[in-house]
Image (cartoon, rainbow, N blue to C red; front, side, top):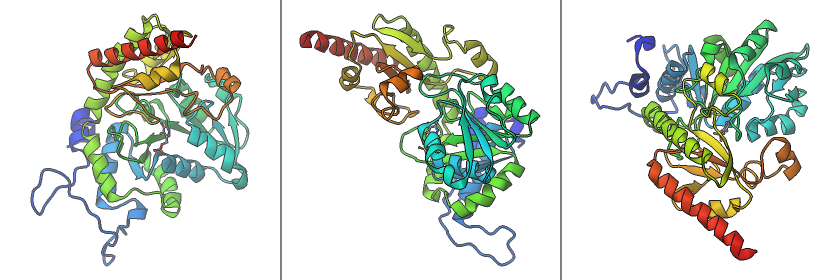
Length: 390
Ligand SMILES: *Cc1c(COP(=O)(O)O)cnc(C)c1O
């Protein structure tokens, strides 16, 4: 079976399966050994070396989906991100970081890079010129995250990878929001693709994991540090992740179809002032989305109008869960102003375009009519309460 020829659902279901040679069971067995024979064995297997049978085989599925030579599974998205950054950045090196990246990644740079003598610059904007303007003679990596959280802004992946290549700089992307179902950055020239597998790869809000996909050469560099940092994932959870990933394509496609419907519905709602979704023609990066993505993903955000109390709206939801994380088959919403972006001042948030009435919506697989009914009743509750108060 050549991986390239297989359809994406077949890759999800079958690539990286471990054959149960003993009992011919339908699914991969779990190998929990932390100790493997070392006599006459080329590969020294050990969970922290990221090469147990379950780790090694599930990596093949991820590499096949991202169209890369290699992949590796980590204990969390941040374990993957921190390992990649520290693997390529030495003391005295510099990294260009996209503004509006995941809070944990931002915090890693701001709180810890100084002690490693690693320099970093956050871009002013998301245009390629903004990245180019930050490049210094000692820049070793450009790091992007597109679509961004929570405003779903896009970065031109191909032009960033071309810029990096022209300067001999390694490029990396956090591909969590898009997934390889919607966006394959390696085909657009990006060197290293990173995932919080806690999100769509897991898809059921019950696994914490991370993943990296790249060339074997880059993976050798990453592995060399990873085995010492020790951020590997337990084989129990690797096995759970394999099960989850069998439905990655059908889940993401279903969530994406729902997201498009919800974006259109919210866009014409008189309690909503703005919808942020790359699939809408009104989105400033809609044309770029059509070029570099094969869909628009299942994350969107919207601004409630002033006469709706955003916190009360969230509290009034009965089906959609107010929740910090995202990407599960269940729909969740979050108010960045009191959750992911609570540590910023209102002015700082506004500078990023995040109003205190902005709701981030991770669209699940429920029926549209039920999602709409829930949103309608929550809006009504949030308006009425306001009138009673005043
Ligand atoms: C959640 C998330 C991360 C961090 O992943 P963890 O699995 O929580 O460590 C990184 N990037 C993005 C875009 C995320 O949503």
